[in-house]
Image (cartoon, rainbow, N blue to C red; front, side, top):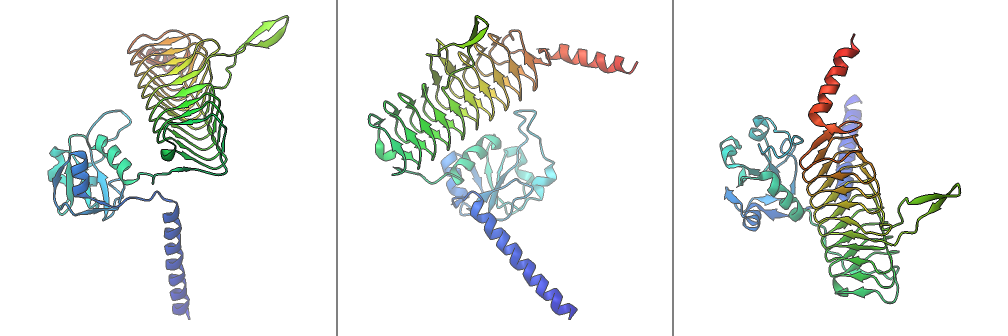
Amino acid sequence: MDGVFYAFNFKKNVYNRDMLNKIKSWFMPAATQTTAGALAEKFGLELRGNANTVVRGVAPIADAKPGQLAFYSTEQNSAAFKILPIEVLKNTRASVILIQPEQVHNAPKGATLLVTDSPRGNIVKILGEIYREPPRFGISRRATIERGVFFRARGTVYVGQYATIERGAVIEENVKIYPGAFIGRNVTIGANTIIQTGAHIENATVGADCVINAGAVIGKDGFGYTRQDGHNVFIPHVGRVVIGNRVSVGANTCIDRGAMTDTRIGDGTKIDNLCQIAHGVVVGSECFLASGVGLAGGVVVGDRALLAGQVGVANGVHIGNDAEVGAHSGVFRNIPDAGRHMGYPAGPGTEFMRHYAWLRKNAKN
Protein backbone atom coordinates (compact mmCIF):
# COMPACT_ATOMS: atom_id res chain seq x y z
CA MET A 1 0.00 0.00 0.00
CA ASP A 2 2.87 2.35 0.86
CA GLY A 3 4.41 1.65 -2.53
CA VAL A 4 1.16 2.56 -4.31
CA PHE A 5 0.89 5.77 -2.27
CA TYR A 6 4.51 6.69 -3.09
CA ALA A 7 3.98 6.06 -6.80
CA PHE A 8 0.82 8.19 -6.79
CA ASN A 9 2.60 11.09 -5.06
CA PHE A 10 5.59 10.78 -7.39
CA LYS A 11 3.36 11.05 -10.46
CA LYS A 12 1.44 13.93 -8.87
CA ASN A 13 4.69 15.83 -8.12
CA VAL A 14 5.98 15.27 -11.66
CA TYR A 15 2.67 16.52 -13.05
CA ASN A 16 2.73 19.59 -10.79
CA ARG A 17 6.33 20.36 -11.73
CA ASP A 18 5.58 20.03 -15.43
CA MET A 19 2.55 22.29 -15.07
CA LEU A 20 4.59 24.85 -13.12
CA ASN A 21 7.26 24.89 -15.82
CA LYS A 22 4.59 25.30 -18.49
CA ILE A 23 2.96 28.19 -16.63
CA LYS A 24 6.37 29.85 -16.19
CA SER A 25 7.00 29.55 -19.91
CA TRP A 26 3.83 31.55 -20.62
CA PHE A 27 5.17 34.56 -18.71
CA MET A 28 8.90 34.37 -19.43
CA PRO A 29 10.23 36.43 -22.35
CA ALA A 30 10.10 34.38 -25.54
CA ALA A 31 13.50 33.90 -27.16
CA THR A 32 13.98 33.86 -30.92
CA GLN A 33 15.90 30.71 -31.85
CA THR A 34 19.15 31.37 -33.68
CA THR A 35 22.59 29.81 -34.19
CA ALA A 36 26.11 30.59 -33.07
CA GLY A 37 27.13 31.21 -36.67
CA ALA A 38 24.35 33.72 -37.24
CA LEU A 39 25.31 35.64 -34.08
CA ALA A 40 29.00 35.62 -35.03
CA GLU A 41 28.23 37.01 -38.48
CA LYS A 42 25.79 39.66 -37.26
CA PHE A 43 28.00 41.04 -34.47
CA GLY A 44 31.47 40.44 -35.94
CA LEU A 45 32.55 37.79 -33.43
CA GLU A 46 35.21 35.12 -33.94
CA LEU A 47 33.57 31.69 -34.11
CA ARG A 48 35.32 28.63 -32.69
CA GLY A 49 33.29 25.47 -32.96
CA ASN A 50 30.09 24.42 -34.71
CA ALA A 51 28.38 27.29 -36.51
CA ASN A 52 25.09 25.35 -36.43
CA THR A 53 24.93 25.14 -32.64
CA VAL A 54 21.41 26.23 -31.74
CA VAL A 55 20.81 29.07 -29.27
CA ARG A 56 17.36 29.00 -27.64
CA GLY A 57 17.99 31.55 -24.92
CA VAL A 58 20.51 33.30 -22.68
CA ALA A 59 21.31 32.49 -19.04
CA PRO A 60 23.92 33.29 -16.37
CA ILE A 61 26.96 31.09 -16.91
CA ALA A 62 26.52 29.23 -13.61
CA ASP A 63 22.91 28.32 -14.43
CA ALA A 64 23.06 27.83 -18.20
CA LYS A 65 21.79 24.61 -19.74
CA PRO A 66 22.40 22.98 -23.13
CA GLY A 67 20.82 25.10 -25.84
CA GLN A 68 21.57 28.35 -24.02
CA LEU A 69 24.22 31.03 -24.47
CA ALA A 70 26.23 32.46 -21.57
CA PHE A 71 29.17 34.83 -21.21
CA TYR A 72 32.30 34.96 -19.06
CA SER A 73 34.35 38.12 -18.70
CA THR A 74 37.20 39.52 -16.64
CA GLU A 75 36.40 43.08 -17.75
CA GLN A 76 36.30 45.51 -14.84
CA ASN A 77 34.22 48.36 -16.31
CA SER A 78 32.74 49.18 -12.94
CA ALA A 79 33.06 48.19 -9.29
CA ALA A 80 29.55 46.76 -9.64
CA PHE A 81 30.83 44.08 -12.05
CA LYS A 82 32.13 41.04 -10.17
CA ILE A 83 34.55 38.59 -11.76
CA LEU A 84 33.32 35.04 -11.23
CA PRO A 85 35.70 32.21 -10.27
CA ILE A 86 37.24 30.47 -13.26
CA GLU A 87 35.64 27.18 -12.12
CA VAL A 88 32.26 28.61 -13.13
CA LEU A 89 33.49 28.82 -16.72
CA LYS A 90 35.11 25.38 -16.66
CA ASN A 91 31.95 23.71 -15.34
CA THR A 92 29.26 25.52 -17.35
CA ARG A 93 26.77 23.49 -19.38
CA ALA A 94 26.09 26.31 -21.86
CA SER A 95 26.19 25.27 -25.50
CA VAL A 96 27.59 28.63 -26.63
CA ILE A 97 29.94 30.83 -24.60
CA LEU A 98 30.79 34.48 -25.27
CA ILE A 99 34.38 34.74 -24.09
CA GLN A 100 37.65 36.71 -24.21
CA PRO A 101 40.60 35.29 -26.20
CA GLU A 102 42.74 34.75 -23.07
CA GLN A 103 40.03 32.56 -21.51
CA VAL A 104 39.50 30.19 -24.44
CA HIS A 105 41.73 27.49 -22.90
CA ASN A 106 39.48 27.41 -19.81
CA ALA A 107 36.27 26.75 -21.74
CA PRO A 108 34.76 23.25 -21.50
CA LYS A 109 35.45 20.92 -24.39
CA GLY A 110 32.67 20.68 -26.94
CA ALA A 111 31.29 24.16 -26.29
CA THR A 112 30.96 26.54 -29.22
CA LEU A 113 32.81 29.80 -28.52
CA LEU A 114 32.15 33.36 -29.65
CA VAL A 115 35.42 35.17 -29.02
CA THR A 116 35.55 38.92 -28.41
CA ASP A 117 37.55 41.42 -26.36
CA SER A 118 34.30 42.67 -24.78
CA PRO A 119 31.83 39.94 -23.79
CA ARG A 120 29.93 42.41 -21.60
CA GLY A 121 29.44 44.82 -24.47
CA ASN A 122 28.35 42.11 -26.89
CA ILE A 123 25.98 40.30 -24.52
CA VAL A 124 23.86 43.47 -24.50
CA LYS A 125 23.54 43.31 -28.29
CA ILE A 126 22.80 39.58 -28.26
CA LEU A 127 20.10 39.94 -25.61
CA GLY A 128 18.45 42.62 -27.74
CA GLU A 129 18.59 40.33 -30.76
CA ILE A 130 17.32 37.12 -29.12
CA TYR A 131 14.62 38.68 -26.93
CA ARG A 132 13.46 41.34 -29.35
CA GLU A 133 9.79 42.14 -28.88
CA PRO A 134 7.64 41.24 -31.88
CA PRO A 135 6.81 44.37 -33.88
CA ARG A 136 3.50 46.08 -33.15
CA PHE A 137 1.60 48.17 -35.65
CA GLY A 138 -1.83 49.68 -35.94
CA ILE A 139 -4.04 52.06 -34.00
CA SER A 140 -6.63 50.58 -31.67
CA ARG A 141 -10.26 51.52 -32.28
CA ARG A 142 -10.46 52.17 -28.54
CA ALA A 143 -7.73 54.80 -28.66
CA THR A 144 -8.70 58.50 -28.73
CA ILE A 145 -6.98 60.38 -31.55
CA GLU A 146 -8.11 63.98 -31.91
CA ARG A 147 -8.26 65.77 -35.24
CA GLY A 148 -5.07 67.60 -36.08
CA VAL A 149 -2.66 64.88 -34.92
CA PHE A 150 0.16 64.49 -37.46
CA PHE A 151 1.57 61.03 -38.12
CA ARG A 152 4.80 61.03 -40.13
CA ALA A 153 4.21 57.43 -41.24
CA ARG A 154 0.90 56.22 -39.82
CA GLY A 155 1.40 52.64 -41.01
CA THR A 156 4.52 52.21 -38.85
CA VAL A 157 2.94 53.47 -35.60
CA TYR A 158 1.35 51.47 -32.78
CA VAL A 159 -1.24 53.07 -30.48
CA GLY A 160 -2.80 50.81 -27.85
CA GLN A 161 -6.33 50.83 -26.48
CA TYR A 162 -7.43 53.77 -24.33
CA ALA A 163 -4.36 55.79 -25.24
CA THR A 164 -5.08 59.47 -25.94
CA ILE A 165 -3.33 61.78 -28.39
CA GLU A 166 -4.53 65.40 -28.46
CA ARG A 167 -4.56 67.73 -31.44
CA GLY A 168 -1.35 69.31 -32.62
CA ALA A 169 0.77 66.35 -31.54
CA VAL A 170 3.43 65.14 -33.96
CA ILE A 171 4.15 61.40 -33.98
CA GLU A 172 7.21 60.38 -35.97
CA GLU A 173 7.69 56.98 -37.62
CA ASN A 174 7.91 53.69 -35.69
CA VAL A 175 6.60 55.20 -32.45
CA LYS A 176 4.93 52.76 -30.02
CA ILE A 177 2.33 54.21 -27.64
CA TYR A 178 1.05 51.60 -25.22
CA PRO A 179 -2.44 51.36 -23.68
CA GLY A 180 -3.53 54.15 -21.38
CA ALA A 181 -0.75 56.58 -22.30
CA PHE A 182 -1.56 60.28 -22.72
CA ILE A 183 0.07 62.58 -25.30
CA GLY A 184 -1.00 66.20 -24.88
CA ARG A 185 -1.44 69.05 -27.34
CA ASN A 186 1.52 70.00 -29.53
CA VAL A 187 3.78 67.30 -28.07
CA THR A 188 6.36 65.85 -30.46
CA ILE A 189 7.43 62.21 -30.14
CA GLY A 190 10.59 61.29 -32.06
CA ALA A 191 11.12 58.28 -34.30
CA ASN A 192 11.40 54.81 -32.73
CA THR A 193 10.42 56.08 -29.29
CA ILE A 194 8.41 53.87 -26.94
CA ILE A 195 5.79 55.35 -24.61
CA GLN A 196 4.81 52.73 -22.06
CA THR A 197 1.46 52.15 -20.38
CA GLY A 198 0.10 55.01 -18.33
CA ALA A 199 2.81 57.53 -19.17
CA HIS A 200 1.59 61.15 -19.30
CA ILE A 201 3.33 63.67 -21.57
CA GLU A 202 2.39 67.28 -22.26
CA ASN A 203 4.21 70.54 -22.99
CA ALA A 204 7.16 68.49 -24.19
CA THR A 205 9.35 67.40 -27.08
CA VAL A 206 10.72 63.86 -26.87
CA GLY A 207 13.61 62.85 -29.14
CA ALA A 208 14.24 59.72 -31.17
CA ASP A 209 14.96 56.24 -29.77
CA CYS A 210 13.72 57.11 -26.28
CA VAL A 211 11.90 54.93 -23.76
CA ILE A 212 9.36 56.57 -21.45
CA ASN A 213 8.41 53.92 -18.92
CA ALA A 214 5.07 53.24 -17.26
CA GLY A 215 3.59 55.96 -15.11
CA ALA A 216 6.17 58.62 -15.94
CA VAL A 217 4.80 62.17 -15.92
CA ILE A 218 6.53 64.68 -18.19
CA GLY A 219 5.64 68.33 -18.69
CA LYS A 220 3.31 69.08 -15.78
CA ASP A 221 3.74 72.29 -13.80
CA GLY A 222 6.58 72.49 -11.31
CA PHE A 223 6.45 73.25 -7.59
CA GLY A 224 6.71 77.01 -8.09
CA TYR A 225 5.07 79.38 -5.59
CA THR A 226 5.57 82.87 -4.20
CA ARG A 227 4.24 84.19 -0.91
CA GLN A 228 2.05 87.29 -1.21
CA ASP A 229 0.11 88.86 1.64
CA GLY A 230 0.67 85.76 3.72
CA HIS A 231 -0.64 83.39 1.07
CA ASN A 232 1.12 80.90 -1.18
CA VAL A 233 0.50 81.96 -4.80
CA PHE A 234 1.23 79.66 -7.72
CA ILE A 235 3.64 80.90 -10.41
CA PRO A 236 2.28 80.06 -13.90
CA HIS A 237 4.62 77.84 -15.92
CA VAL A 238 5.09 78.55 -19.63
CA GLY A 239 8.26 76.54 -20.38
CA ARG A 240 8.52 73.06 -21.84
CA VAL A 241 10.43 69.84 -21.32
CA VAL A 242 12.93 69.08 -24.08
CA ILE A 243 14.24 65.50 -24.06
CA GLY A 244 17.09 64.52 -26.38
CA ASN A 245 17.67 61.29 -28.29
CA ARG A 246 18.24 57.87 -26.69
CA VAL A 247 16.96 58.98 -23.31
CA SER A 248 15.35 56.53 -20.89
CA VAL A 249 12.90 57.80 -18.26
CA GLY A 250 12.04 55.34 -15.48
CA ALA A 251 8.66 54.30 -14.17
CA ASN A 252 6.83 56.93 -12.08
CA THR A 253 9.54 59.52 -12.62
CA CYS A 254 8.37 63.15 -12.89
CA ILE A 255 10.01 65.81 -15.06
CA ASP A 256 8.42 69.23 -14.58
CA ARG A 257 8.09 71.84 -17.31
CA GLY A 258 10.06 75.04 -16.86
CA ALA A 259 8.53 78.17 -15.38
CA MET A 260 9.96 80.49 -18.05
CA THR A 261 12.90 78.47 -19.40
CA ASP A 262 12.78 74.88 -20.61
CA THR A 263 13.69 71.82 -18.58
CA ARG A 264 16.25 69.90 -20.67
CA ILE A 265 17.53 66.32 -20.67
CA GLY A 266 20.56 65.61 -22.88
CA ASP A 267 21.14 62.82 -25.37
CA GLY A 268 21.77 59.35 -23.99
CA THR A 269 20.90 60.13 -20.38
CA LYS A 270 19.33 57.32 -18.34
CA ILE A 271 16.94 58.19 -15.51
CA ASP A 272 15.86 55.47 -13.11
CA ASN A 273 12.43 54.94 -11.50
CA LEU A 274 10.93 57.36 -8.98
CA CYS A 275 13.11 60.39 -9.71
CA GLN A 276 11.96 64.02 -9.44
CA ILE A 277 13.37 66.61 -11.84
CA ALA A 278 12.06 70.08 -11.09
CA HIS A 279 11.35 73.08 -13.31
CA GLY A 280 14.22 74.60 -15.26
CA VAL A 281 16.69 71.79 -14.57
CA VAL A 282 19.31 71.09 -17.25
CA VAL A 283 20.80 67.57 -17.33
CA GLY A 284 23.66 66.97 -19.76
CA SER A 285 24.26 64.05 -22.10
CA GLU A 286 25.09 60.45 -21.16
CA CYS A 287 24.28 60.90 -17.45
CA PHE A 288 23.03 58.30 -14.98
CA LEU A 289 20.42 59.26 -12.38
CA ALA A 290 19.65 56.35 -10.06
CA SER A 291 16.34 55.73 -8.31
CA GLY A 292 15.09 58.37 -5.91
CA VAL A 293 17.26 61.24 -7.18
CA GLY A 294 15.68 64.65 -6.62
CA LEU A 295 16.87 67.75 -8.48
CA ALA A 296 15.47 71.06 -7.27
CA GLY A 297 14.64 73.95 -9.60
CA GLY A 298 17.43 75.41 -11.71
CA VAL A 299 19.97 72.63 -11.07
CA VAL A 300 22.52 72.11 -13.86
CA VAL A 301 24.12 68.68 -14.26
CA GLY A 302 27.05 68.33 -16.66
CA ASP A 303 27.72 65.61 -19.21
CA ARG A 304 28.42 62.04 -18.10
CA ALA A 305 27.63 62.76 -14.44
CA LEU A 306 26.56 59.92 -12.16
CA LEU A 307 24.11 60.50 -9.30
CA ALA A 308 23.59 57.45 -7.10
CA GLY A 309 20.37 56.47 -5.37
CA GLN A 310 18.40 59.08 -3.38
CA VAL A 311 20.78 61.96 -4.00
CA GLY A 312 19.16 65.33 -3.33
CA VAL A 313 20.43 68.50 -5.01
CA ALA A 314 19.42 71.97 -3.80
CA ASN A 315 18.15 74.84 -5.97
CA GLY A 316 20.55 76.26 -8.50
CA VAL A 317 23.50 73.96 -7.76
CA HIS A 318 25.86 73.14 -10.64
CA ILE A 319 27.35 69.63 -10.93
CA GLY A 320 30.31 69.36 -13.31
CA ASN A 321 31.07 67.07 -16.20
CA ASP A 322 32.07 63.51 -15.21
CA ALA A 323 31.20 64.16 -11.56
CA GLU A 324 29.97 61.38 -9.27
CA VAL A 325 27.79 61.74 -6.17
CA GLY A 326 27.42 58.90 -3.67
CA ALA A 327 24.07 57.49 -2.55
CA HIS A 328 21.94 59.40 0.00
CA SER A 329 24.06 62.54 -0.39
CA GLY A 330 22.66 66.05 0.05
CA VAL A 331 24.32 68.50 -2.36
CA PHE A 332 24.19 72.17 -1.39
CA ARG A 333 27.34 73.47 -3.11
CA ASN A 334 28.64 73.27 -6.66
CA ILE A 335 30.70 70.21 -7.60
CA PRO A 336 33.62 70.69 -10.04
CA ASP A 337 34.29 68.60 -13.13
CA ALA A 338 35.25 65.02 -12.27
CA GLY A 339 34.50 65.66 -8.57
CA ARG A 340 33.73 62.68 -6.33
CA HIS A 341 31.42 63.85 -3.56
CA MET A 342 29.37 62.08 -0.89
CA GLY A 343 27.74 62.64 2.50
CA TYR A 344 25.30 65.09 4.05
CA PRO A 345 26.13 67.81 3.35
CA ALA A 346 28.08 66.40 0.40
CA GLY A 347 31.80 67.04 0.21
CA PRO A 348 34.85 65.47 -1.44
CA GLY A 349 34.87 61.72 -0.93
CA THR A 350 38.29 61.63 0.77
CA GLU A 351 37.19 64.35 3.19
CA PHE A 352 33.99 62.45 4.00
CA MET A 353 35.95 59.26 4.71
CA ARG A 354 38.35 61.14 7.04
CA HIS A 355 35.38 62.55 8.95
CA TYR A 356 33.83 59.10 9.17
CA ALA A 357 37.09 57.56 10.43
CA TRP A 358 37.40 60.28 13.07
CA LEU A 359 33.83 59.71 14.25
CA ARG A 360 34.34 55.96 14.54
CA LYS A 361 37.55 56.44 16.49
CA ASN A 362 36.19 59.02 18.91
CA ALA A 363 32.75 57.47 19.38
CA LYS A 364 34.43 54.66 21.32
CA ASN A 365 35.90 57.07 23.87
